[in-house]
Length: 572
Image (cartoon, rainbow, N blue to C red; front, side, top):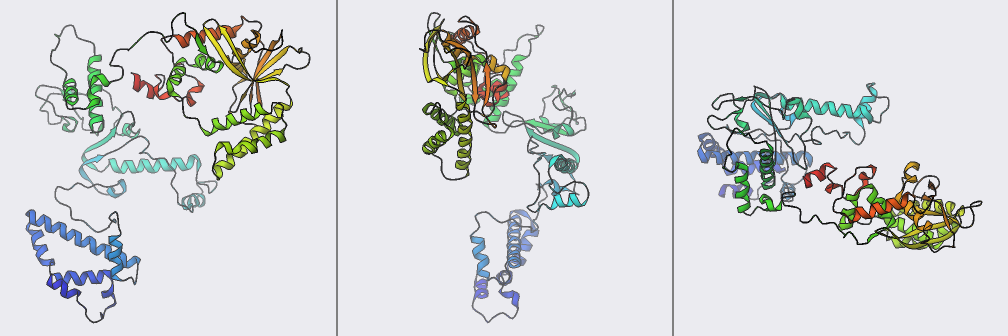
């Protein structure tokens, strides 16, 4: 300490320019401390003191490297600036200084860093789908790679995208994987996780094409047995590596992963058919003992009472009694007809929160109700007046929403100019078998010239971008329920009013409103009555069927549906 204090004491200006740099000051302090030779002798002597001296010397080398890098990046900076920069670091800066490696050290490298080197054992870890290969396009801000492809004649333009770019990225990833898996002299271990959230990469199949299939066995004690896959007791068969790379696909080494692995093993063991020639083994399965121990230790996931599908069904009774009326809305008739499971899950609270598109749709419906025969100018003025109701902040989102809303009311104005409303937002109530049908029709319009004044057509406004097909519109259950209400006189219109058909009017996209027609029903006993009665029976029942269809892509409860992968993991 005294020598260091003397080195730091005021002295005449240095004769050499580099003495005023951070590296020069550090060197003066190090020389004055006189620790170089004692630490060197201690490091060469081995033992705990030698290991400690070795680490201290590594730290000094890293400090000198950091000071030299600082001087190169900040020429002319005072040594105090280097001290301030080190103290300001929240995370230690990386260093390229050489580090001492002990005889039992493990090299942790990237594939590029491992190129040109070999080891007896190499582990390539984390070979997950979506992580490796990583097919995201790489390029710098100036597009130098795309320019190189253009000049080399490998690309027709300098965009650098398209299939050629992705093929080049895939080729780079394959080369990198080949480098990583070719560094082992004796054993290669490739690991991945396969659970509800992660899946192994297809690259695992390149290393071991027969992964997951049956493996040969050999008696315990065979020196060729792959001990990395688990040791075996005497007399018990164990897998043989066959002198080939070993791929391990397992679960995370945490409580969740251990419990999940034990449950899978236990379920698989119970699923195997019993051999009548062998007596029953009264000893609990090892996985069952492990789960029992974890449950006793307070791990809730290990307790079978918390497992989905392990407990009996709480009730198999229907939702409503055989004589009880069932409230039904026309929109729910359509939902139950498509997928009764989706309907019951949404009725139990599985609906998504109202988004910006739905809020905008409600506003357009309200404008159409206020001005059932409005012109474009009237609808635009009403839109400008009510747009603040959306609560949008200034920015590009508000601008885009305003433009979309203006386009929607323009399409709506064109449609309203070609129709003659008889009623808007007309409520009705009608009993159809067990169904107590109740709803509100957006527009009831005169059917047009030649159809008679008593003929009306139901119009349902839609603000979605994608209209249904003309074929599906002909059997749309919601329109059929509306037509049934007209035919039964539930709308309170003039005596003798009959349905001349129904239509879906889409104002959410396109150059003009898209109209999908449904033919008029022939009488009160036509197909809509059967559809409404069937929907009521399904809504009152005890079993609800999942029916996959094009609507599944926007289903808010697909993660609980057994027709989808995520749902199967929940209920099976």
